[in-house]
Image (tube, rainbow, N blue to C red; front, side, top):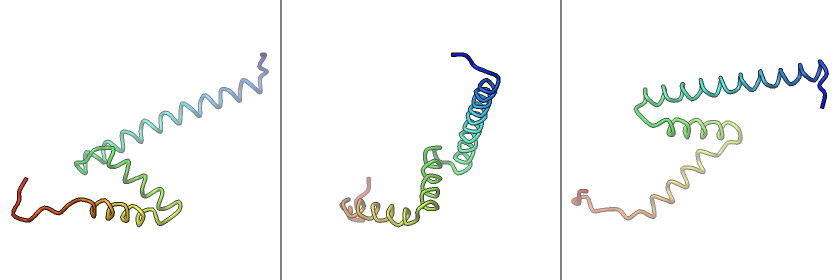
Length: 86
């Protein structure tokens, strides 16, 4: 396969954009770590929060659905008497 000048430029452009994406992804990861540290939680919790907000913004009703799932899970957990301690 021979590459002419136009094809080489297009490939170089793709390579440069991919490098930029990787750089942005690394910065986002560091930003999420910083927010997690500030909130005293794990970065995975921040990622989950961000994911929920993005999904809610994109299609709506995600948070209410999550609440429903949580309520269902809670209803399956037996309630311990108040005088019992773990």
